[in-house]
Amino acid sequence: MRLSKKTDYALRALVTLAEHWDKGLVSIRELAAHNQVPRRFLEQIMLGLKDLGWVRGIPGRDGGYQLTLHPSQLTMGQVVRHFDGVLAPIGCVSVSHYEGCSQEAVCRFRRVLLEVRNETAKRLDFLSLAELLTLSPLAVGERNVGFADGAGI
Image 1 (tube, one colour):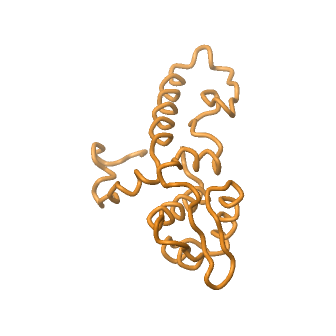
Image 2: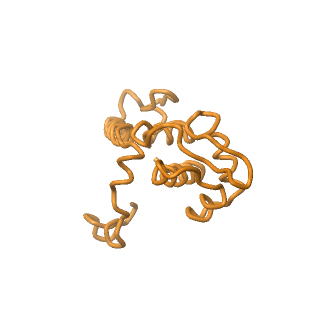
Image 3: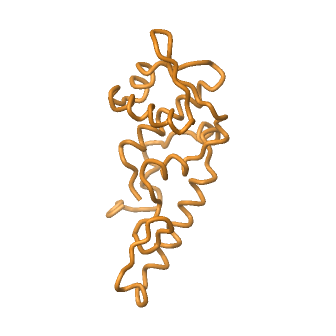
């Protein structure tokens, strides 16, 4: 699974709004600058989030955006599925976007990719914005832990 830029930017903005849950509106300018996201692209994303009812937007000089849900009520899985559609690494293990394959009856790695899908879905579906706020950013050396040279990762 690889997140699209749209999903990445939406998650950045939503986490920022979760950080400001009890502090009021956050301007589009502040959201874009804080998250290093192109403002025009972020405006489109925020309109989509507003249509979903996840955020409210107030226009004008003193306007901005605010979460309409408590940060504990919105999960990473909901956001990823909305923007990217599926969590499955291949179509033949997808529930909502199943794509048949001629090798399904004999494929040896399909089961492993199904397990990857299930574990990914489980983790993202139970990880709320509120819980994301409790996680510390990844340290520089952490991404290679357990992998000597990181080849293919």
